[in-house]
Image 1 (spheres, rainbow, N blue to C red):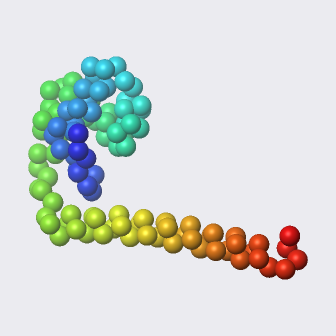
Image 2: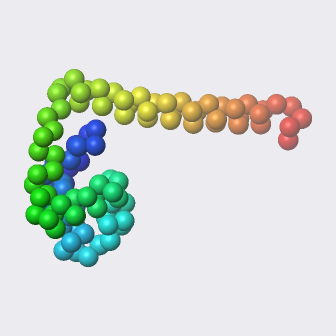
Length: 104
């Protein structure tokens, strides 16, 4: 099962997620947590599956262009770099405070 970026999911991913809930008996909450997707999204898919309309979901969405895929990748990378920077700032402040005389 592969999740597409930007909140778009493949038909295979949707059907496997619904099977996890319907056939395996896993709760919607637990399945959404395992698959890292919003609970409401999975609930909508299950509702559509029971109505026989799961294949209609996402049919009107256009595929992502190369530029959109690259932008999504760069945004994820930027978020990771910012997180690493913040961790390093905190570590530097912690060790700088320890090295000051009279603070031990």
